[in-house]
Image (cartoon, rainbow, N blue to C red; front, side, top):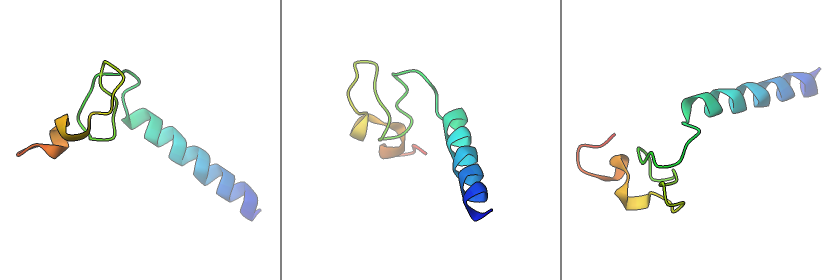
Length: 53
């Protein structure tokens, strides 16, 4: 039963994280995302700039 609940929790977590993250490249809201050219956004991301969230 514990394994079933753990599996369900992991699947729900993966589903929610997939829904909240765009499935396309080029969106640099967060430093861990990927830019259109395939590179990491890093310091170019909105959350790394003054006023970004």
